[in-house]
Length: 306
Ligand SMILES: O=C(O)c1ccccc1NCC(=O)[C@H](O)[C@H](O)COP(=O)(O)O
Image (cartoon, rainbow, N blue to C red; front, side, top):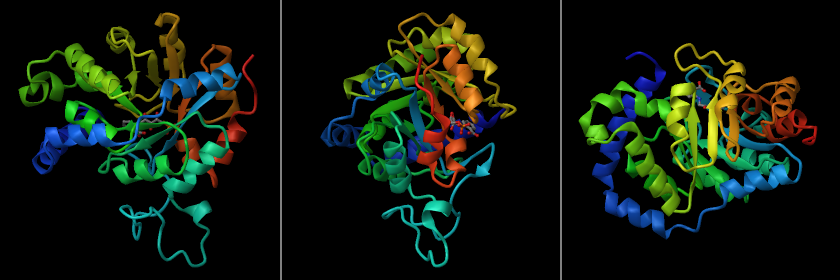
């Protein structure tokens, strides 16, 4: 296995097959159609920008492969119930703990356009319940942040309440997709991405397509979604450089909404992106490490768009 993405995708392959054994594609398909209608992710971004504000997709991420635990505890956490931690005597849950409802409400109060919630359990300590809890605690549209390869995961995303899915182009260039016929079922990378995009759109969800380099961008631009995420994190070294966004943005035609993802930490980072007309940001770690993630958002985004 060459990098973290390959290791994550190998686990996703197992998960997809195990989950389908428990719940059939037909059943998850029905559940996806039975949940309340999706919230408009694109409109939430556009409306913040039209009001002269940066649009922030604020992430709820308990841990990450690059940084380990970011917020909360690893033990005694109730992930399947309310999301609230038991036994808090002597500690301040807002300051110390990972409580998706509180984080989501704070993000909403402080001007986030949308939420992003990690649902991957093994590498990010995420959970589908975190998405459900966060969405129920506010009116913001929610991105299911996970590693999609298969149509089952798109229906599953909608069934858990997601309003947007993520398609990481690198996942479809990976050895596991390219060489495993059980996963690709004869589809090329572009064919599979098209299929997943179409299902998401039919279900009323938006699609954020994510790239790290020019080859991935070529493929992303063949999809119809206007939302193009440029991830500043190198998945082999975990280093982030905002230069990735600045280089790739030159090759994106007008009419797309560019989302700069990963490694945004300081007001200077935000100002630099705004000065290059990049108005949409996906930020996790900087907010997760702050005592109150929503207040950290408000403090990072103090200026209006020009
Ligand atoms: O965050 C990681 O370590 C990571 C490792 C491997 C694949 C993806 C990873 N992160 C997913 C993301 O895209 C970020 O959570 C998101 O862009 C926010 O980044 P940040 O603001 O740096 O937390």
